[in-house]
Length: 265
Image (cartoon, rainbow, N blue to C red; front, side):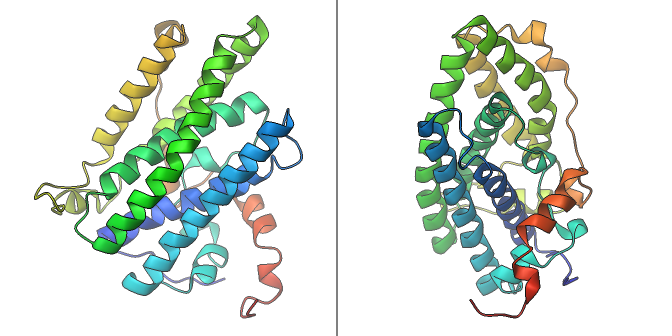
């Protein structure tokens, strides 16, 4: 495996966060192919996974062409676990449908906010890319919102399963907004409207959390009783410290690539 160091330029490092999250999340969601509770959801998760891997590729290509990182395939498939900067949330096995749905809801709401801010950057190529990808994620969030509402307001069993999943997912969802070393410098970069385009992880978390909690309250969830305000985030992924699940997932994901890392397909 390549030991190419992580990029030090703040923008490149931030885009690598987005790319790694999307690659790993896309792989996890693809594991629902053929296993969905109904055919509609089998197709939905497969389609979302395809979008996410495509988004990862778009960012890896930009990082290769504009920031000097390795070829996208090498960056995606030929790094050790310690050089991945994905969050703990995306690394977890798919679990049951309730877990994957709550993770999908939390994750794609956060991705939408990131793309929304990135669409304000001065770089025309990145601005256009973020605007395009934001449009795709809009459908992801619509799908997640529809099913979250339906199952939280459905039967007693479906509601209990969703609440249990929320308690499990929430600490790792907060970890999506882990602080990182180049964050302050990136916050000082001016966007096309003359204002900083990246508000920082704390602000993004507050925005995400306020919106998520508001939706849960509308769906009759007692967030105070659930204890979501008191949860501590699960951190480490942005620094290369990962859950026990990432290494085995990377082994599976890169199995064919590792047969001949220099091959042209």
